[in-house]
Amino acid sequence: MYPPPAPARRDFISVTLSPGRSYDGGQGLRRRSCWRKWKQLSRLQRTVVLFLLVVLMLFGLLSYVHVADEWTAVDSRSAAAWQVRPANPPVLPAPRKAAENPETVAGLSPQKPQRHLRRGPPNLQMRAPDGDAQERRQAQAQRRAEVVGEAGWGLEAQRDGLSWRGTGTKPPQGTEPPGKKAERPPRPSPKAVRMQASPASQNERQKAVVDAFLHAWAGYRKFAWGHDELKPLTRSFSEWFGLGLTLIDALDTMWILGLKKEFQEARKWVSRRLLFQKDVDVNLFESTIRILGGLLSAFHLSGDVLFLTKAEDFGNRLMPAFRTPSKIPYSDVNIGTGVAHPPRWTSDSTVAEVTSIQLEFRELSRLTGDKKFKEAAEEVTRRVHALRGKLDGLVPMFINTNSGSFTHLGVFTLGARADSYYEYLLKQWIQGGKKESQLLEDYLEAVDGIRKHLLAKSEPRKLTFVGELNHGRFSAKMDHLVCFLPGTLALGAHHGLPAEHMELAQALMDTCYQMYRQMETGLSPEIAHFNLHHTKAVKDVQVKVADRHNLLRPETVESLFYLYRLTGDRKYQDWGWEILHSFNTYTRKIKS
Image: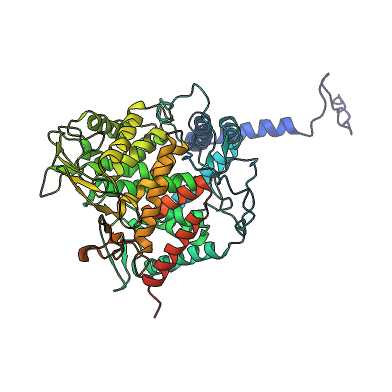
């Protein structure tokens, strides 16, 4: 038999399509192919791949958390700005007579309401050097904080009645003093405030002031950069604490004068070279007013948080000085070891030193939210308030750090070792919103004591001056330091104290000017003795040989500033111009 015929071969392909599905270009085959490839990998290979995937996921998660934390911090700082604004020290209004005087100062336009609150002149870049990563991150944080917090700052400024020049109106009713606002450590939102790119044209006197500063700064920069003081005659330097006192003290001046380049160069030194971890004794009072006060002023004017950070670090290093049996601080403290002690020759501190640190310490607490600075300083004020040994509000010059009592009783002066006690009474009262009645009572009682025991008139010009009392005997001796008093009295009158304070301020201002005017050089001596005998052949101001020097003290010029701003009388400007001319003539070293 023949075998059955072979089936015929088909010359076509049959394709069957499943219902509800369409052709996907082979994606399903490729997916199944990837899975097959995964299954074909060895166990070790699959483990390595999974490990890498987990590592990538962890890095992504950590990056997200870091970014979220940064923005949360910025939000919290901007929120804190609504509760605690940067300090705006009371700045006096423009002279009342300015509008009546047709001779306006060249280059200055009348004040106009500002739309935006900006502390200090605009347009100074707070950009750190490219080589410093930490400063670069800090600058970025400041810029973020400015963007987030700008609206809050502007609204708060309008709500509180602030102007570009500072506090110009009364605080809202019912508000607490600045020191009581912060329950947790709040930091003001640091804004990138910029210095003027094109400042207004300056008149002759303004240019002369800037030129005098630049001359002195050039000498310091060349021969004493980073050191405490310049010695211009020998073109060298001297050290007090080794902390760049001149540089820190000049920061706010450079900002106000619009010296962008000099300010930035000094800021770089503060950022990189100002280190407090060093074995060195500093005087509590001198370092507070120069270093702590200088850093806080620079922070308020520029908004740069670098200065506040440095100030807080330095403030912490000063705190061991308050660890005494009486809570009256020692005069000296080692900022590296934390060991504090009185001077080697006595266990006393001077009254002016322990009562003239309160403004800076209170402000440091307000800005950082750390109450320990304020509490330590105010405890000193409370104890001095309760002490015996005063004379109608006048205080002796020394106080013992062990017993907490006055020593060297019976000697009363407004000069060295006691002067700024009276000044800080008034300024603390203003700083605290005029609510601390104890400070006001002590100040008013002291002014009455000055009138009763220390005031006298000279011959032949009848100059009103402040003398000294030594165990009941009056001395016609007046330190140049006492010339802080005209400005302080005028400031008090401006804040509602008796009008007779302004009358006394004007009389004393004339005396302080005559201490310059009656000298052949036009420069005041360190100490003046006033003539009390009626004779026309003798000048009112007499100078002893040991006192024939001038230490470039600022008290007279500061008082001239207050008197001009509060009275509008341009003679105070003219007196200041004469004093500057005398300094340029007799103390300015000509370049050789």
